[in-house]
Image (cartoon, rainbow, N blue to C red; front, side, top):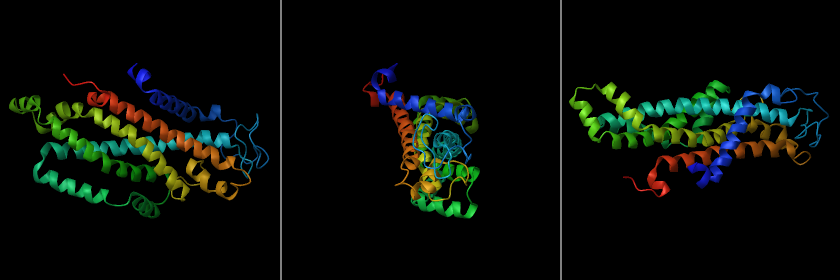
Length: 277
């Protein structure tokens, strides 16, 4: 209810996310044609009742390709964020909890990793391992982990100074039990926020790699590949070939960013103008 009253953009973002999930799960039932069916219609057909978003240069239905592209985009993005969140949680909590020399060494490694230009790093790794959904998930997941580890470490440093952590140590709780039962539950809020916000960035990164030819291989309909392949060649003759893919990428990034910002405000009382008791 707080989101409905104060965050209308977040509500719009949630609606977009739900629509994307429905498209991804029920793509076979929603899409009128297969994503690679070249005989769906005549080439370069504009939007009509039969072809809602028109057809491309091969006669493939663009609406069907957008629908199937939602499945690919969400699969890669959710997989990458899951991998990155797990890595960031492990590195951030352990580093912040133990501190000392171990924390310093780990953070210097994270600093060096963050200093690398992300696009150059992604292109270099993908040129070696080759395109593919699994490779893309792993590479993007490592990229998410580098940024998230710093955030989770900061939250862990704040939590480990609380009195209940000292009490747990006093009664003989092991390090693993302290991390699992007392540290991790109390840093879940920043973890959830980080994962949600990262989804928007991962969608844009996946689209950029697919646009450059290092993402999901053809003929799978990645939104980024739809912008670069035949779309860029025939952009003047059939602008709908790139417009709708660009709209899909923009809406997905907007939705996850708005929801992430709203969750951040919701979990942090200081950001919504309510003083902590």
